[in-house]
Image (cartoon, rainbow, N blue to C red; front, side, top):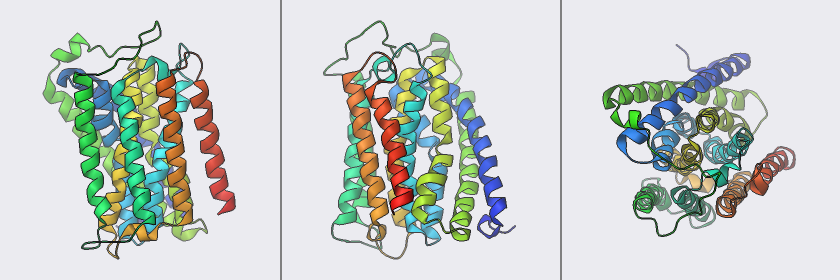
Length: 341
């Protein structure tokens, strides 16, 4: 069977549309499975959203980045990873529109989620430093690519400790939704839950491979740059599970899980850069960072700062200043990327 990158353009577009449908279905089911696992394992919704939901629904993006880098498209690899962070942050603002009782960042007040946004800022900062700093590499891998997983892992350790021994607590209001484990879920059999989780993860991973090949084909057969294809096309399609899971979690009342899914997925997405650097065998992938990719880096940093401000300020009603600002900055940023670069 030929690789999808050799298919006609129309086949690649159809592949993306079918993949979107599959990811939408898998994402909906994921929410219920991970919510039950969070209660069964006793790790809390914020950490479950960061590790189980956020990381697993990011599998398509990992495959796109790895495939693009190995195929000689470093801009597509990098912009897919960073564009996914921007898209998922925007998805959180969209999900806020479905929770009319209160602002989502207010209702899902969680110290672990707030800490995860700071970890995300640190990870993005490391990528930016590597892009503008000396291009050192060992076996074609930049030292920052080795540091990213370590910083991510340490962030998860701090998040777990923060949940167990918080040094400050958010003020509880009538709109605050607490993370209280479901008693039935705590007694549920672990085996079937893990089996469902593994099966859905496999479906998401296979679909991610289809998206990767279709994205490469579109980049090759059109005049769109790898940055635009990655930042506006493949990153959005591979982020669809996050959109579905966050909306499903909000409707189910698992608000901390919803916010943790987006923030945790974003922090995990930065690790795509490490995957891309390993797959790119022509030196450090950071040396291939263009002005367009730096623009996306700065855009993701701004969107993360707006989200953190919303989590701290906790506006009660509507989508809040941060929700409006996130939507405007995302649309304005990528419109600028499409027209000015």
